[in-house]
Image 1: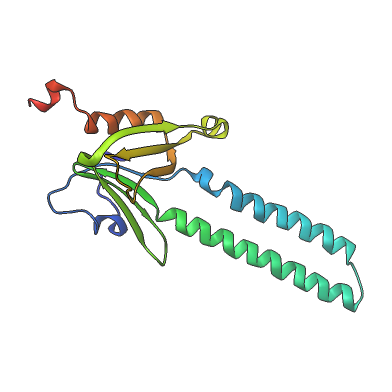
Image 2 (image 1 turned 90 degrees about the horizontal axis):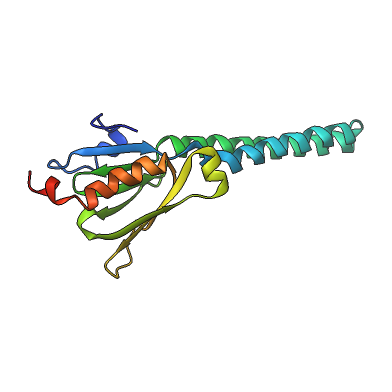
Length: 174
């Protein structure tokens, strides 16, 4: 979590000149659990099939196909890691942004003034690994940014964002 650190250029280009970045976090690495399981499961299956198709021309061709399929799983995993590395949740003084995508860049945004309610939820796995999901609501409108999944340290971020959304009367008089 950064407070006041400058955003990477992939995010900074979406900030307005009068905005101050308050929070910037990368989504929790737990988002990669499924791709990791797929790669490891594929490796185990490929190794077992390698023992099964041990010899002969037909077995050799099948082995090549099995390992090429596993290589495709590995390439997909590397792609998911690269996508994760450029995904950020940013809260500025004016709005919340979620930037995603490696080739096709998507920026979902909600002005802080439009948020009427915010909550978070954590699954059992989320509680064990330290991530949660933010649910944002606005005045009866369908927004581009309504849920943000895999948020690290959700309790801390929830309190910080709520403080910005709903400042106390003492904070607003300053």
